[in-house]
Length: 428
Image (cartoon, rainbow, N blue to C red):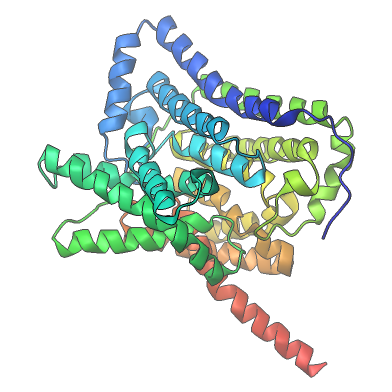
């Protein structure tokens, strides 16, 4: 399905990159400002060190581990690293790259730090040397592939080995992850046929299950943790709102008719690969990202949830995938399915675990787009049931647990739906 893209203001690759750069810079400036105003610079440097040394297994909220300024520093460092790579390799700022960038930003609030992601990047780089291809061809996959970063931290700092052996082993494991995740991800895509937007989450779940099983065979049990901030901080909410407003303003700047043309984006099913920047332009795409972010933040606050590390990961992932497959029309039935199922089983909607499931369940948005709202609702129901149980398989080392669950739901549901549809067609 293709629609003619309205003539937009040509802002060029550099300006598009600068739009992304505003996110880590905003967190950096805010982090420094908070540290200076509270006269806690030295403590916040120590907080960043605590983040680096933490095992980071699901769910480890860096806002608790290191505090707000240290967490903002971590977010900005990782964000700036990825912007640098985009600039160095002259990457096209398209929908999937935007989705990857915002996902990495989100998970820098819990799970990912500058230490545990670098071995995975190194593994990806070595893979490109082995295959004699450019690193730019796989940067997006590696950005998503840092879903398994907690494995590096767990081996390094959980005490299962002496410090030196643990760090060396962890770095080698990280290199292995980065080396194999690229070829594996293309094969795993066939399982769910593009109906799970978090394909690397599904791939990471498989790799994580294998690695966790290896550890268990040596008597090492990786136990999920639950370190979560139970407070709302106005400074965090304010920064998120500023980012959403910035996206909206840039969307209008790029395309003055972006709001009027916004309904056109709702016509796309969202199945991989649906790049809104290519199909409908950057203006409408940025408006869609802002709109999804506003709705997601509003939902969290309305149900009484806390905007903590895991929730911020969910928010930024939804925002990012507003450029790559998600919009309100294909996401809402899945979300409703999750909420109804959570209520049926007696879960509190304001619990962090349920909130992030609601947000991340939108990985199954293409199910609604392809098969309609009823089956999108069913996908949400199944996702809620699975996601609360599959984490034990990989022990919490796969940060994209919802992507793993979404892959299972789509991989099972799509063939069944197609089989019944084929039967209907045969009867007619």
